[in-house]
Length: 96
Image (tube, rainbow, N blue to C red; front, side, top):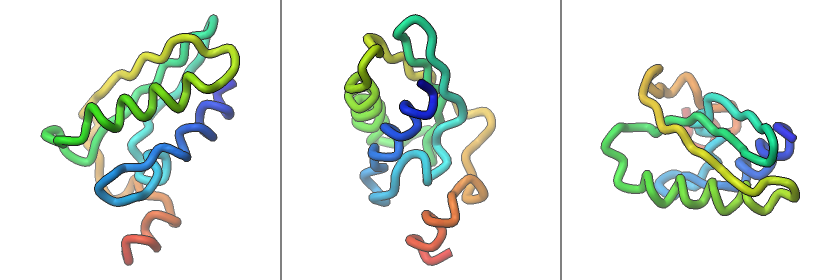
């Protein structure tokens, strides 16, 4: 089920960069138990004004998976996000 969750998360875009939250390196951990998905993630900056939009998009996307009836998103800032977390795909899109 974790792979299904990650597949869904690949469709959730960071609205500022139009790159998936997975390729941005914002997802730290994904787990599932008894129909509940638990996602630990970060943002590129603690004051991101789009935080609620991203979290809501994550919840909506993951709830589309059969068998998932609850999504909990834990937003953390330790460790701090850095450009090193970007996938090669994201680096190429950003010209890095």
